[in-house]
Each structure stands twice: as C-alpha cells, then as structure tokens.
Image (tube, rainbow, N blue to C red):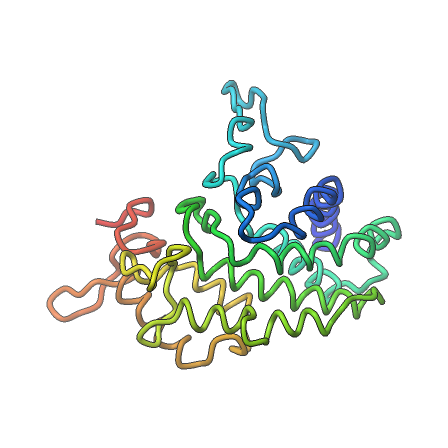
Amino acid sequence: KAKHGSLKIIERHWKLLDSNIGKLDATSRMDLQNPEIKKLKNHIPARVDENGSLVNAVIDGRHINDLPAAENPNSWLKQFDSVPLILYATNEFLKTFGKESLPQYLSNMISRDLNVMVDYIINIYKCPCADIWEQNPHMLHSYDVGAAYAGLISAKNISSRLGIKINEEKIDKELYGANGVVSFMRNLFIKDGVLRKYRGEFAPDVSENPKVDSSAYFVFGLFDPDHLMLDNSVYLNTIDALKSNHIFKSIDGKSVYESTFPKRYEGDRYFGGP
C-alpha cells in the first residue's frame, strides 16, 4: 500500500512537470536580470487544475480565478520548492522500493526531463518567491535554498539509480563552488551562528523580524540531515533559537509550552500564539 500510494503521488507530479517542461526549459535559460523570470507564468503555480495550469473554476461552491496572477512577480502561488521536492521524493521512492517499481513510461519521462529540472533549479534559487507558508513572495528564504540543495543532490542520486546521463560536474560546481548553493546559504542566511528565516533580494543583511522560522526543521531534518551544508553548531544554535522563540515561554523561571503547536515564526497567530 505504501509503495502504491507513493507511486501515484510521484506519477501525478512528474506528469505535471512533463506537461510544463517547455516552460521550465525556457525559464532555465533566462537571465536573472530579466524581469520575466520573476513572473508566475514562467513557473509551475502552487495551485493547478487537472491540466497543470492556473485555476479558473468553481471549487466547493467558490469561484477561484488565478489567471490574473500570471503576470505577477510577487504571487503567493510562486513557490520554488516544488521541483526540488519532487526530485527529493523520487529519490526516496527509488531508495526504498527500487527502480524496478517504476513503470517504464515514468522512468522514460524522468530520463527525458531530469536535466531540465536541474537547469531550472540552478537558475532560479537566487530569485525571490513565496515561502513554505505561502507568504513573503518578495523575499529570499533559507528554506528554499535548502530545498534547492536537496533537489540537486537528489538529481545526482536519481541519475545514478536510473542510469541517466547528467552533468555531475556542473551540479557539484553549483553546489560547492565559490558562488554556489552552500556558499549562498552560509554567506547570506547565517547570522550570530543561527540560520535566519529570510532576507530581501538586495538587502544588506538578514531580516530581524522574525529572526528564525520553523521551516529550519525541514532544512536540518530532510534537506541536510548530515550537516554538510550547515555545520552542527549552526544546527544546535538554530534549534535553541527556535525553542526560545517558537515553542516555550518562561513563567517564573520555568519553560512552558506557549501554544498548542510550535509557532511557524515569532509573532505567528495561526497556531494559537499570544
């Protein structure tokens, strides 16, 4: 059952990628200075119809029309973790169930599209997008940089498991080079030894409001579990900051839970923060 359910999810998402492959290929070739690269129409929206396009339909009695957002460079529907997470999930599926569990057509689709996915991730991870909570679409987020890291690592593993020819040297240069993913994360999102939530695209420093975000749990737990992108001290400092800002508050010198669930970020009200 686990294999069947996982396969259905992976199939659906690869079909979505494949139906948009021309768009993603074109975006992967855009210059970062080109304002078109920031527009939602050049990416896969977070909410799609059965054809993988922007939604314009009545759903549960409510008319949802996302079409006007197509030209918007700051739409909440523009989230750059989508492609990396599909690669991550595919690699986990292959690791758990083996390549023989993939239908041949799906294996062919992955082989055909994988290099485009790599080029797309490499070209857009330094662009602003909405965060994991579908907020702050004008900012750069440490979570999304972590997702790009995991996506590129997963692409290498997928190519090895399925025998797909891929430019590993290019990926390694983007991951570990002087201006690559790891350097980008360490230089732009760590302050006082703590992984910060976000920063403006051209801001001189990270944002102090809020400082940390619970999406860091995904960065450390899923994207970088071996602490190769961020060292162990950053992990420990960030977890301490999250406990102080998101989970506990001090009453009479004792730490008690502040809300039913951990807050997403300082000042969050969604999970019952004060």
